[in-house]
Amino acid sequence: MKKGLVIADAGPVISLALADALGLLHEIFEEFCIPQAVWEEVTRDQNTKFYLDILSTFEGRVRSIAGKNYLSSLLDYGESEALILYKELNASYLMIDDRKARQAAEGMGITCVVSG
Image 1 (cartoon, rainbow, N blue to C red):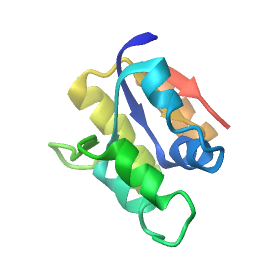
Image 2: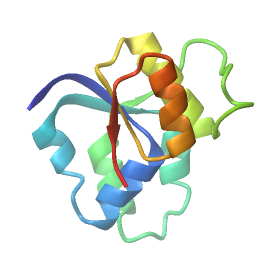
Image 3: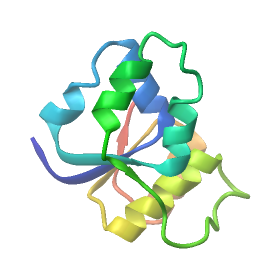
C-alpha cells in the first residue's frame, strides 16, 4: 500500500470504473480524494453503469480547492483543480492520464501516478 494521499483526476476514475476496479483505490492507496470539479465531471451522466460505484467510492472524499483556480486557462477545469488540490493538501501522488496536465504537474514538482 502506498502511504499518503492521492488526488485523482476524472480520466483515471472513469477508467477504473469502466473496468469495475474502483476498489483498487482502497487497496493501493492509504487515502484518496477528488476535487469538486472532477466530481462534477464523473457524476454528470447519471445513466452510466458505474454511476452508483462512483457515488459509493467517493462519498466523503470530494474536496473543494481553498483558493482561486489559477490554472484553468492552461488546463481542463478538473485537471487544474486536481493540481491545485494536490498542492493545498500536500498530497503524495496525483493520478492523472492527460499528457499535457502531467507535464505541467511534474513541472510543479508533483509526483504523478500515470494511468491510461
